[in-house]
Every structure is written in C-alpha cells, then in structure tokens.
Image 1 (tube, one colour):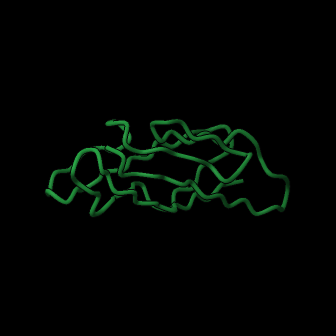
Image 2 (cartoon, helix red, strand yellow; image 1 turned 90 degrees about the horizontal axis):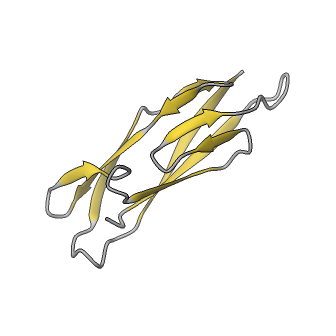
Image 3 (tube, one colour; image 1 turned 90 degrees about the vertical axis):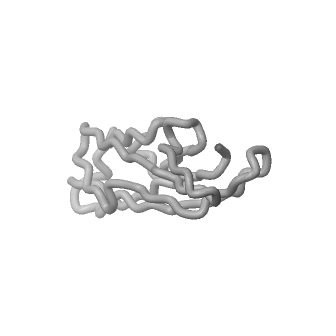
Length: 101
C-alpha cells in the first residue's frame, strides 16, 4: 500500500543571523512511498537577502512525521516502516520547520 506524504511548513524567522526565510521549496511534492522503501526529500530556503541554501543540509530545518508507520531523519529521508493494514488508507504529514539558519 502506498503512503501519501503531505507537507506542512512552519516558517520561523532567524533573529540571530539578521535574515528571515522568505520562501521555501520542498521536493518532491506529493510523493507516494511504498512500504519498506525510502524517499529523500529536500528543502531549499530563500532568505530576505536573496541567498539560498539547502535548509536541511545547513542544519536549519527539522523534520517530523505524523504517523507511526513512517520515520523521517534529520536530513529528510522518509522510511515507511509498516503497512497500516488491508483497506486502510494511509496518509501522513511530514512537518518541516525551517528558518533557524
């Protein structure tokens, strides 16, 4: 059974560095991940000074999963670890918090 992964993004301004996140691009969007497989997600932040970086690689993004059937690493690697059961639709949300760079 495929797991549908949705994203909720929380933007938190960076006070320590004097710039804020003005936009975020997450890819791939709406990925379907099979049980016992993985999918790497990336998040690129654009800041108020027009610079960009990979928020996760720079340590400025945190990832969380809303489902016990999948895990997500601090680099955005999602692993589907369990099937929710026959006939049970499985949708989960990956929450990415960015802006602390």
